[in-house]
Image 1 (cartoon, rainbow, N blue to C red):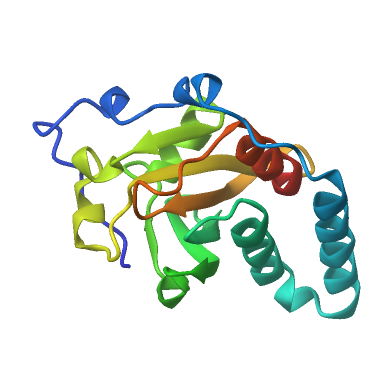
Image 2: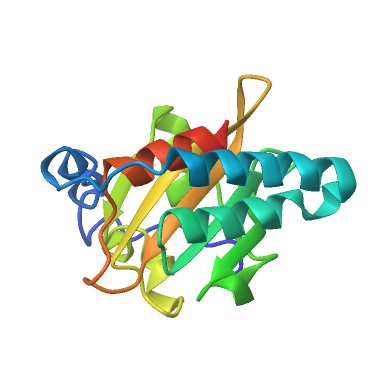
Length: 178
């Protein structure tokens, strides 16, 4: 994916695709603290042994723990204007190295609000996503922090209605995102 142009604001209001409060209404699966702990240990070992693979390990862990169809890590570029997809797993793995414009993209919205967001059919507002396949049913995005500074976004995506995020997915992303 290449950095996008402005979204088509005539399509729908950005808040119309934000469905974060839906997480509170959905059934929550039981937490698997052991799996999350193992993922954190694996991340630490990867950081120590092969730091260049740490972000991909993070994306792989998100894919597994959140049972997502796609997952990844988007980092803010050095100039602060764009996001670059440093790691991706699952169906969107082929998009590694792509990115979006920070101001007009989903990640920019998450960082601008300083909070996690669940977005349902984000392509209705973020029209550049209409070209990406497979399409997004919903995306859960959480700020990715380094030394208490937001440096990007971690995300988990479902591409069909069979998989919906829940509050446990939010917890997993927040834990791994710090």
